[in-house]
Each structure stands twice: as structure tokens, then as C-alpha cells.
Amino acid sequence: MKAVFSRRRFATLPLAAALFGVFAAGVTLAQESVKIGYTGPLSGGAALYGKNVVSGIEMAVKEINTAGLEVAGKKVKLELVALDDKYSPAEAAINARRLVQQYQTAAVFVPHSGGIYAMQAFNEQEKFIVMAYSSTPKITEVGNKLTIRIPPTFNSYIEPFIRYEMKKFGKKVGMLPGDHEYAKNWSLLFAPAWEKAGGSVVSNNPMSYNRSADFYSGVSRVMAEKPEVMFIGGPSEPTALVAKQARELGFKGGFLLMDQAKLDEMAKVTGGLALLEGSIGVLPVSYDESPGAKAFSAAYRKMYGADRDPTTESSYNYALTHALAAAMKLAGTTSDATAIRSKLGEALAKLPREQNAGGFRGIDAVGGTLVDPVVATVEGGKIKPVGLSELMK
Image 1 (spheres, helix red, strand yellow):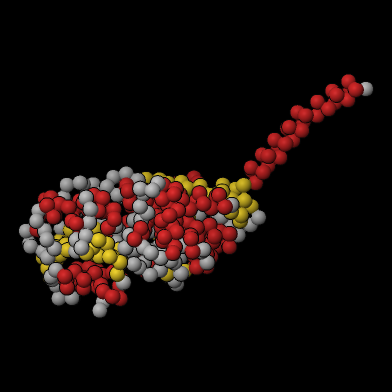
Image 2: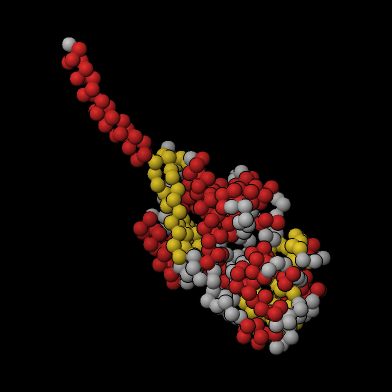
């Protein structure tokens, strides 16, 4: 009897192991994998800009997965699918269609206005949310119901920036913007605003910030008109090269920076802040003393290294990724873009402080985030935070 019992006992072990394997597989299968899309520059002159966006999304995805996300009773694991579009609107549209059709993404992050416009031509029909990281006002003026504009619009910066530079340096501006869509939009609003304030545009020479590292000829043409202020802007690294080469050619005035360029990143290229004296731009995240920004900066450095400074691209897209996951939970779906979009404002307003790196308050009626912009000047070789209202006095 013992021998028979022993054989039966050991005979059941493979069956038990098999049943356990089936059960374990069932647990694994119960966790739904949900893709979040990104299309943007990951190569070329704007590569760092695009990678900063990706790092913020990636960081949020890791935190969400670690904490656990459940939507409509199902465990959900988020996965970022990031595709390089080389800053090309046409490539962005191709990538977006691939992300939606191949990976079934309900939302696609994109950090350039040309790509945003291209995607807005079909995103409502193909039912996905454009998570638009660009400050161009037109993005939300077109009435696209499945678009979220993540940063505040740049038109709020124009008058205060002009007042600062005119008061400090003079009324003659030389324009050296990038030739990408965002820079064109900035330029269209900036030039008449400068003239309305009593200034003169002595030269305007757009340059390809994404495809060049030598801007001497373009800078020289502008310098020939003896500007007192230079209007420059695009991704941080090429913008810094423009500033550096202007100083090397003898420019003594101030730099008025589009919000895409970040002072701390520029300083790494120029060898410090001395060459950026008299600049005005947006406040770098690492200099922001607000609770959300400080918490984000600490977490970012812990994940990516103590020598890595977070940027607005990272912090804003980090917050919106957390809000996107929370909106899926509130909507009870990971695939219905319209339902998720309807809950994004509520989700963003309810974000815990440590996840709300930008201090977002919600989303307005046209799809723009509600957030107060923070700016800075470079004075005495240091970055100095300053309020827009203070600049208007």
C-alpha cells in the first residue's frame, strides 16, 4: 500500500506544477499591456530636446507601473513606444499612424508644432489624443477636440520680455530664429509686438537650428546691422551656439530667448552663464523652488543621475503622463480616446503635488493646460527668477 500511495503522490506533482503554471500564466495574462506613443526628434540638432521629453514620460511610466494601475477592474501595465521623426512634420504623421494602427495607442505625445498640425489633420477621425508639447497658440485655436496643449502659450511672454530687453539694452533687435514651424509662429507675433513697443527690427535671418552647428555667416549678417538685442530660439544646444558665436563676433547686447531654449542647458554649451548675461527666458526647473518642481528634480536625479538637470520638457510631460493614466482610471477605459480626454482636466487638477511638477490646475475650455508660466533673467552671471507681473511694472 505504501508503494502505491508513494507513486500516486509523486504522480500528482507534475500535474500540480502544470496547474500552478496555468494559474501563474492566467495572472500574467490578466495584466493588460497598454502602449503610450511618442513621435519627436531623437536624432539631429534637436535630439536632446526630444530625449528630455521622453525621459519625463519614461519616468512617469516607471512610477505608474511600480505603484500599480487598475482600469475597469483590470491591472494595466503602461509601455512607452518612442519613434524618431527627426523634427519632420511628415515623419510625425507617419509615426502617429503607425503608433495608432500597430500599437493601438490612445494618445501620442509630440513636441513640435509642425508635427502637431500634421497629426491634427486626422487624429479626430482616427480617435487618438494629441498630447501637444508646444506653446504655439494656434494649436488650441483650431478647435480640435482631441488635442491637449501642455505648456502655456508663448504669447504671454512676448510683451514682458520686450520690456525687459528694451529697458536694459535698447530698441534695435536682430532676429535669428530657427526656421521650424514653432519659431516661425513666435516670429510672426514677436516682430510686430517689438515695433508696436517703439522698437525697430534691423534684420531678420531665420536659420536651420536642427541641421547646422555653424551659424557664423547668419550671425554675421545680423551683426552687420548693429542690433542691441538678439531674438533667438530653438532647441537649447543650437540656440546656445548662436549666442556663443554672437559673443565671439563682438555682440554686447541681450538675448531674448524663445521658451524652447533653456538657460541651464545653454550654459553647458557656452561654458557658463557669463556669455548669456542680459538674457531673458523661461525659468529652468532646477532653479524652481516650488514644491512640485523640487520633488520632481530630486526624483529625476535619483533615476537618471545626480549630474542630470531636469528640464521643463521632462517635468511637464511627466505630469501629463501621470494625468493620462489617472484619466484612464477615471474613464474606465484605456482605448476610448474621447472618454479619456473628457477626464484629463479632472485628473490633472487632482494630481498629487509630487507628481504635479509644473503646478497644473486643470485644462481650459479649448484644451490648453492651466498653469502659471515662470521666467528668469541672467544678471551678474546668475539665473534670477522673476514674475511676469514684475516685468510689466
